[in-house]
Amino acid sequence: MFTHIQYILDSIKDSELKRISQKVIDSQRITPEEGLLLFEKAELGLLGTLANYIREKRHGNYVYFNRNFHIEPTNICIYNCKFCSYVRKINQPGAWEYSLEDILQKVREYDGKAVTEVHIVGGVHPKRDLHYYGNMLQDIKKIRPDLHIKAFTAVELEFMIKKSKFTLAEGLRKLKEYGLDSIPGGGAEIFHPDIRSQICDEKSSTNMWLEIHETAHKEGIPSNATILYGHIENYEHRIDHLERLRQLQDRTGGFNTFIPLKYRSANNTMTEIGEVPAIEDLRNYAVSRIYLDNFSHIKAYWVGIGKQIAQLALAYGVDDIDGTIDDSTKIYSMAGAEDKNPTLSTENLVQLIKQVGRIPVERDTLYNVVKKYE
Image (cartoon, rainbow, N blue to C red; front, side, top):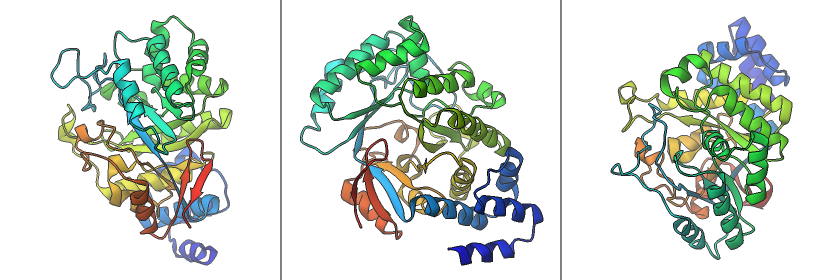
């Protein structure tokens, strides 16, 4: 690998790119200005080489996945984000709001199955508070005490905690008592105010998203981080987003993984923008891996980008492709993703990873190894 890297370095003509590349190879942190230059000037081949160097230095040839399923309690939401194809209002066609018994029945469907995680996110329902969802967590744990519950975006958390008249710390502590194990990364979208004000001005602010995750980390609740890319933002906005995450991770170390989420254009008010091509997906994964030097893992969410791009991403810094899903999420299928009924068996995931010469590793939510498929 060193010989290949040295060959690439020697072939770089641009002195600034060569200098930044050397910093990356020497495990030195790059600046926002240097990250922006990589986005704007580096060829995809160079970005892939640097990102893959980092991922193999950290994880060798391993690629992680888990056995998980999703529950989306409701798509009724008080907000009207322009990129969202999922939201409905009460009594609007296409709206759903599962009862607690509906949700528990979904959990019971996995009795005897070796799933390790349930991922719970949905709309911000105007009538549901922290205790409603807390009781749901408590009842899920009664059925499957071994199941890791990763639940509620920062946007959902802000509303339910405020509705229940808790401080952030009190609310998160209470949810942890109810059974919350970790928090997903949704709701981050784009942190830069120029973009956030245009695409999701009603929902939780950048500072609130960051504060919720920082408070969760302090309360012993780990979380994930995301970015929604490929719409009206530019590279400068993406770097700003990555920098804010990197600073928070420096303070807490509480993020498990970073997940770039691709904007899909069907059935929302930003449809005319279209979607970025796969080459831009790979560029974004690579720069994310290079820039986020304090994040252990970069995940390609195969439901959002498709199986083939997820495979390609494993050569551009990605070391995780999420999990089995089991046709239990509608967020991306409603926005036009190619997998209308997203599900992969463990065997499918193992084969997907092996097809590109990587070694599949089943993990739990916190990246403890369950099984290696060598």
